[in-house]
Amino acid sequence: MMEAPGSKRKRLSNHSVYLPNHVIDRIFTFLPTKDVISSSAVASPFLNSWMYARNLRFDRIFKSNCGREDISIINKIISGHLGKKIYSFHLYIPAPNRYSLFLQEWIQIVASKGIEELEIDLWFTPDNEDTYYMHSDSIDIETLRSVKLINCELRLLPNLKGLRFLKSLSLTKAPITPHFIQALFRSCVVLESLSLAFCSSPTNVTIKGSNQLRTILIRGCGNICLITIDDPNIHTFHYEGEIDKIKLIGPTRFEDVIFNLDTTTWLQHISGMGNLIEILRNVQTLSINNIFLEGLSPRYIDFEYKDMEFYLPNLKELQIVRHGLTYVNPWDIIIFVKNCPNIERLFLDFGDYAMEAGRYWNFVAKEKFENCQIEFSKLKLLKVKGYKKLELEEKLVNFFLLWAKILKSLIIVSKSKHLEIKSKDVVTVSKIVTISTYCHHRDKSSVFPKHTIF
Image 1: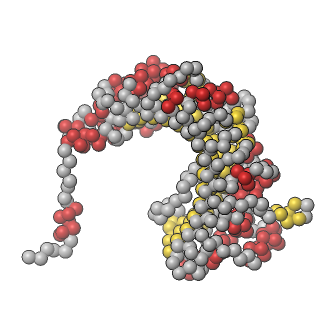
Image 2 (image 1 turned 30 degrees about the vertical axis):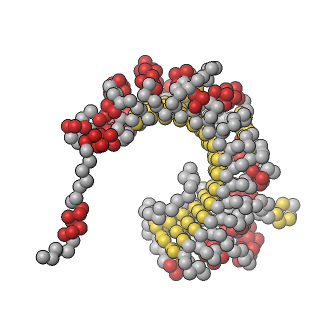
Image 3 (image 1 turned 90 degrees about the vertical axis):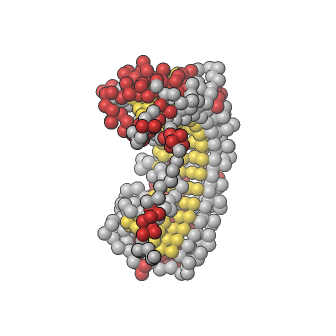
């Protein structure tokens, strides 16, 4: 007897996989707290699954759902925890004074269960801005590998035992001093990653003296006059702020770099960094914004045309993001990519505004662009975001398509869902290129740059 069309598919879709209760119960313990609690109501055998949760996440969403009852709920969950292991503990504290009697006790409980990740997020109202002091002995836990503190000043005490195994530290809106950095590296001897966001210091800060540090992330630390990086072992360096607030001392081994510079940055500070070329020489993944690009772009100095003077032979992936109004034009981008001979993946974000078609473009850059013949022999992927189908955008995209002989994929994400992009709008000489188009809010390409900080 023949089956009706689609009946086999329907039968398969209704087929369920049986899992023993103890396996399901085990799976529940790895979910975030609120998910474990809701999942516990699935069936009576799982009513107590929340007592074995491994990821205790009491974040802002949890707080908004619980209201002023959050402390009693958190205390019940932590005090009633029966599992042998707690992997992570994330606590959002909107009013530190209300939690001070419980915080130390909670940390002691999770410490006894082998906690590896700790995040404390404090929030102060504008009329009650203050700093919470976190003494290192309260988190001197041997199993701890990652600590993230927001609005907390970490005070390091001597003779720490547990923190020597810490691998990652993130501080946001925290005061730091040169003495703190020195003490940090003495205590956390295997620290691999250090993140500073919106931190402040009364003096200059030098990051130096660690043998294991590989990653430095600095964002919005404008209240620090100068941060000096003097460590030859750093592989990953992400910076967001003013260029004159950072000083890099070589030699370096940077392989993964982000320069997201503030609009207050003076362009001459970028071009004046004489060691910048050497610092970026080994970079394999690079993300920059238009401020950084403008600082290195060709220009006239004393009535003499000066080209970009740098060379990135190891760069494989480049992302260029345009913020706000900018003087960056297609020629600036072409010249930058030309100096990256082994680039394979290129991501361009055109931003909200049109490219500048001013006097420099009309009288200098346009002619150079139209007469340029540069082959991008290794480029395989080009993704363009914020595409508005404007003249200079089309010129730039078609230029890459013309001179990237082995290009395999072109992905265009339009700025507006009403913008229709047809295949005839782009010109390509590659016979293997695949052209995909998406609108801004429906980018289903599954191809994204490594860096998503922008």
